[in-house]
Length: 65
Image (cartoon, rainbow, N blue to C red; front, side, top):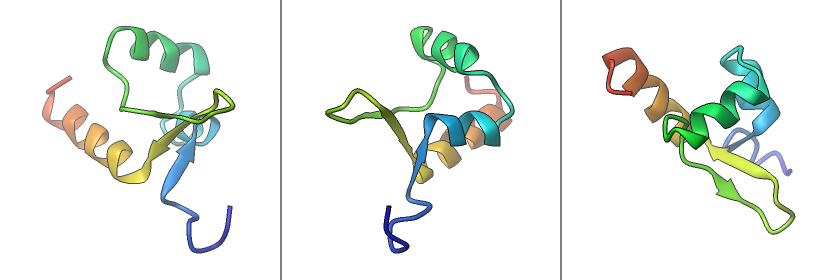
C-alpha cells in the first residue's frame, strides 16, 4: 500500500489488534451483524475503512450495538 493510502483501510489483522479481539470474535460479530462494514477484495480478503472503524467504535461507546 502506498504512503498516500496508508491508514485509509485496515486489514482484518490490524482491526483485531487495534480492538484487542481475536479473528474468531470478529467473525462471530460479523455473523451477528455487530461488526463494522467490510470491503471484500477480489482475493477474498477483508478491509475495513478507517472511517467505518471509527464510526463503529463511536456507536459502541453510545451503546448502539
